[in-house]
Image (cartoon, rainbow, N blue to C red; front, side, top):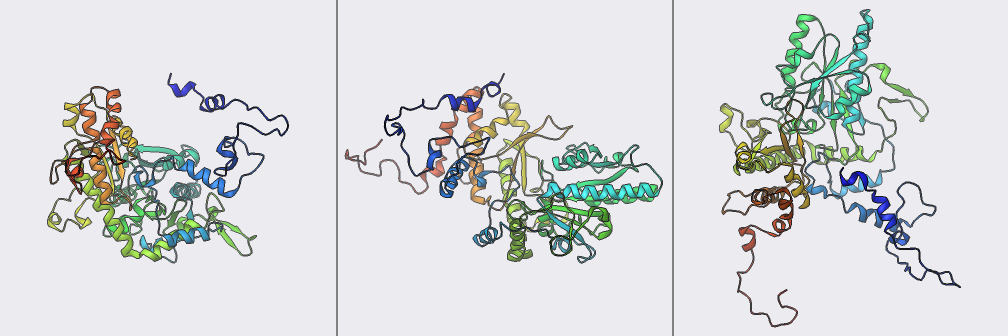
Length: 532
């Protein structure tokens, strides 16, 4: 049994506190207690976890306690596991604070960015994120399918609706199927399909009861874009043969704010008539703080009227089509700030920088021979484009600025006892949060590490991460850190014990950069300047 299964941390803390103090006979004052301003009474008493305290706490002390506790969390800058954006300019922070108390239900101008036939006729809503947006997109497709079945005199229960998606689908897509009683048909992924929805297999899962196909513009696992146009063409052929209409909802949680700017020639959005709805997360590559997502339908015909509620009690007629009603205005205003502040060129510049840094990391990892990169954004598309400027994203396979990598076959053959999951543990001790996880079903025997290259993942941090991961040859031989420690250690426990030594070592280049050689200074005089 794991230690954590039978040790109660709360009990340990409770039984380890100081014993009850003795009180002064006359004043009843606690002789063993000193009150101090920092943290008020919660400096010595536990912060209540499961019930509200009988007495409150000054705002400043409350802030300090929560601030200190949150400081123990991983640094957002070093959290390479998350797609969520964590930085905005001070002016945006100010707007966020000014509007944090406001309620808002609204829609953006994303329909134009995603080439809706008419931005004026497109319809959509703000959501709390892509998870809610995906539910709404799926619900609309289900209601339209039900209406067509009823009109044709067919049952909507036997055998019931199904929805098709790749086995690499993010959990929010599967949630829709489970929560709203739709059969979830997962198409296996493979190395040949680039770890994403396989266009060669998808039609085996489609039939007259398929309400739609979820196609992901940016897989959570490896960052690959799924082939929206190719799948759309296949569904066109299927409809021509059978008469069954199957729409596409594009999950652009991350890619919806990357593809339009980085690869505007890529066809994936409302340019394809079969794409009826698209969602995205404003708090990912939309560069806003967490709490805002968007879903847009190409026109009103694809959002059933029965999903729209008309409200009359807010002083005017309002319309609501969301899973929750009230939502804070601040994240939406933050998104609006970015759209105005950055414009198309600003978003494009950031997306291109993210992809450039992701390519840098990918190449560095592969150059080490320790790792094989599964993502393809650093690989050029074969053909005449190969000779173009290497900064041009159009010459590379399109995808998110995500680097998914694993131990190379050569490394594993030479070091069969080294486990890839140790890399996650050792990097975490150095501040980095890099997840190690299994690929989707059919490839679950393959583990991968993943780095999301966001705006604050600069080239300097890429260099630092590479230095922490392994040794590569740039100008001089840099000293390997985490990976080398694993190779040289004889056992898992020894490898972890090596961590302190690894953290203290620096490359030869770093040791001599801007520093004096040994013996450059005068001998110790015995004062406070003496050596430790």
